[in-house]
Length: 308
Ligand code: MG
Picture (cartoon, rainbow, N blue to C red):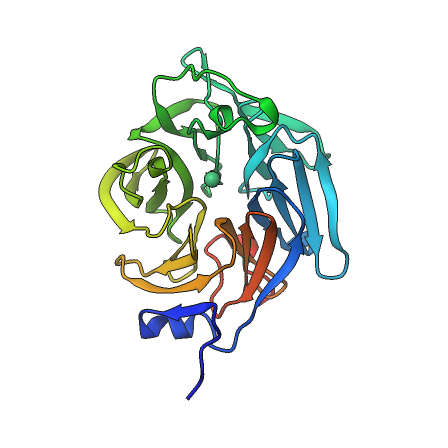
């Protein structure tokens, strides 16, 4: 009989096929303030992640450890890559979604809606048609990072879709605070975290599930209730399982919403992503540190899958 390491909780036998019972939870970087936005760049064999309060995007690689990828990041939070592999991020400071071009220059993709400034874009995904989907809660302008504070101009905390031709539309407007989001592997479902319980205990800590009908969303209700804490960043694997942040670590749910298991992390988890040279690593941003664990499944996002 195998004794489980203390960081693993198996709620369903399927979880033992996703995270090997002998896997270790490794802290690969530490000394930050609030880490977020992990994204794997297999073509550069490195992980990028944000340290929001210090306004930096950090780069980590197995051989070289941590270096500064970008300073003065404008309180960059969530990151992803688009259909061409370019870095796309959300900035609280400039209250926009920004793309890093191949030459390193920055292009602001969206900073206002219906003539009013966005709240503070938090997290972002790009569908394979090049549309940019992002959430716009108010955390970045009410959390007082480095004294930065502003009154929201938007009447709601929307989820947006920016079409490839630049048309910005609100696709969900009934969130208290929308946060992380991810597509199912076939992009027919979009999962979006409701983290409004950070302000109001009466708001359920749920991941909501939406059917993607072209450029619009159809609400399919609550997918999973998260406890303890609330859901922030989340990602799907190639099997359609949903891996989400929670106060006690990473929680993994089957496509039918069943809790499969947990990776317990000693700090509050903000976000996670798949990656690694072979695609079999889960990188976890958790407050002051970044952790890594071996997983027996690859991420749904094509650039995270590594060498075959
Ligand atoms: Mg977030």
